[in-house]
Image 1 (cartoon, rainbow, N blue to C red):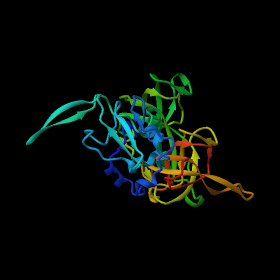
Image 2: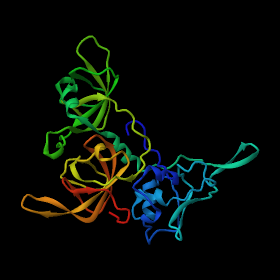
Image 3: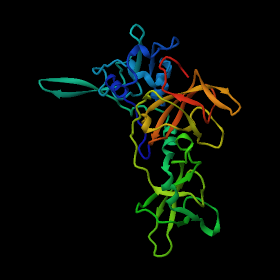
Image 4: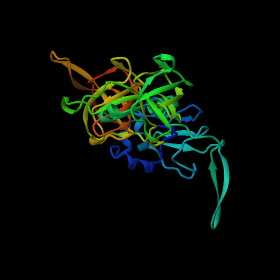
Length: 347
C-alpha cells in the first residue's frame, strides 16, 4: 500500500478459495439486527456494509451468493447497487439496479445486455485508513543503521517544510524521489532476542538536486515537519491495490508495539505484531485480540476467551507484521494476546 490505493475487495464466491480458513457459510453468523437490504451509497466501504449484516465483516465472502448475471464484474460493488440478505440461506447478493446502464455486447451467436456501472467501485476500507497504512513500513535493523539521513535544514533550523532545501549525511540511493521516514522504537526479536525490524513512519518526500557540491535535497511534501536524523529511503514498491480479508492460520502471539505516542491503541490505530510471514500472516490476514487476565507479579498476561478487537494485517515480514485496528470494543496495549479469529464471535 504505497502509491496505489486500496480500491475494492473481491466479493465473488470464487474468492473464498483465497481464504482457506473460511470453510462454510454457516460459520459466519448473520446479525439478528441485520437489515433485509442496503443500497450502496457513495462513501460506503465494503467493511462497513458487511458489518451491517454479519457478526464479523471479514468473513462475508463465505456468504456471498454468486450472481454473475446481475453484475458485470462480481469483484466490485458500486454505489446504487442494492445488497440483499436471503435470511433462509444466510446469503448476500446484489439485486438488479436501475442506476446501471445496460450496454449491448455481441457474443456470437447472440447479443446480450450487460450492466455497466456509472461510478467507481467503493473501497474496502475508508480512504484515510488506506492512506494511514501506506505511511508505515517495517525496515530491517541493518538497513536503518546504514540509511542516509537529513543532516540540517536551511539557516541552521532543526525543522524543514515543503520548498526547503536540506543537507544529507550518508550515501544516497539512485532514486530521484525519496521517502522521508521517522524511525520508531525497534521491535524486540523472537524469544527476547535483539531487534530485527524497525517500524518507520513516512513524514514526507524529497527530490535529489543535481549539484556538484555537498548532496542536497528539496522537500516536496510533508505530513509533519522534517527533522534532523530522519531516514531517507527509496519510495516503497507499490503493494497490492486490493486487500482480501481472510482468517489468519492458527497462531498464538501478542501485540508487540503501539505505533503512536501512547501505551494504548483503539479503533483505527496501527499496531505491530510479534508474528509474521513465517507464521502464515500475509497482507489481508485478520487476527483477533483477546481480553487478557493479569496474573503474577510481573504483570504478564494470560489470554481469556473474550475477543475485544479485530486486526487487519497490511504489511508482513518474516517475524513481524503491521496491522490496523478495524474493530475494537476496548483499549489495547502491548503484550495483549492475539490468535486466529473465530467467525462466530464479534469483537
